[in-house]
Image (cartoon, rainbow, N blue to C red; front, side, top):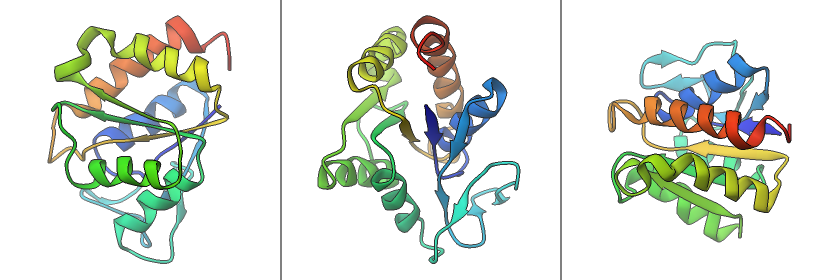
Length: 157
């Protein structure tokens, strides 16, 4: 399995860091100039630049070029780019899972594991709010991915 993400701070970066730490293939699209809210996205992340610096293009291409998408959030309701990700998954008829810490809490890693075992994707797009929008989302992503990796995914990859 390959983890796809856009490189923004928060959920995206946490997913990429998880992939790097576990030797899991990763990639995805980022805006032209490798722009994120904290500056230029490091080259160690194997991301390709879209022709546009508009982050919506990155979001759409990551949904389109992956088999399934999981959107992480702290809040129960998606907003901004996270909401757009969900809309694009529907547009491209891609399986989508939204994991909210407020709603799913301790069940999030089990739900992720079941989603991945059901769809058996070769590529998983991970998205969610940037750090400035939900400062705790990166930690939530790391915790869920680590638990799902240990419980469900390590055997499969």
